[in-house]
Length: 357
Image (cartoon, rainbow, N blue to C red):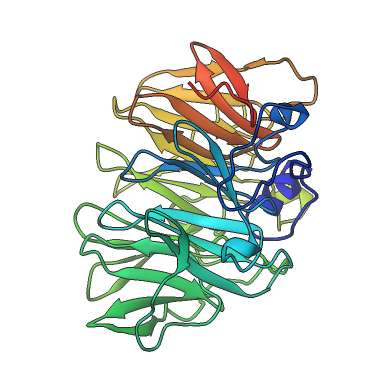
């Protein structure tokens, strides 16, 4: 099932990845030389990419460590470079454009640490008092304050001290017994903070009170992950159904305009499906990966599908972990199976040997 493939990327479990080069040392930034390894995938399940302030292109992975393309060489980072383990997730940029990420053991529920790139190496971040153990999903709010999750709860930095930020007690039925919870958070330009939950929909916090968005408001399910606020002020989110019985498979891509939940039942793959990646480019187009179907570009009126892959693969499933537009305007996609860049209307596979440009 497609959701199992994607959930393995989203911290549920590790998976077997391609082996590291044997003819060169792929440690501490040694360049991967042009040999038989150059045709290997950067990672089978790349997370990212994302650019730091210096233009380095970073990726995480389920079990291949962290990777950085600096324009000349591809660098790999592993435990001997300071990582806890080779599961690298939660890539984000700090207020000054510096890269932060989470390094964790490959086993589910294993230890983790928040890492920061200082321009030369990945170092464990220095934490304020109260910082929780085994953090995941770092997030910087509009004021530059750091938030993380730990033990299924949100935590934030306040006046140099970390404290828990509890959500309201559950009021809706608890249907998810899988152990995986897609909790994340986003902040609107208004300053309102949104928190996604498993089985409780999403909460908006206006600085004083919580306001719940759930199936009562038109969501297809109450298992939610937040994507982004678009240029028009709409909140894009996904509702999942992998934890529900077969007759309740109502997962869908949703847009909330502050009053109404909109879904897209006439677009193949955007309803009764799991949608993990949504991104707005600098021109205001919304990019959506419909698992098992296609990548769509939505201009606010029309959906255009992209399905061409180079080299052609019969088993290509459009399981997409991440979408990103770099400073040159190029669109990158972390698919299940490798890293790809959109060239015209074709997704071109970018291996360790390129093509990077």
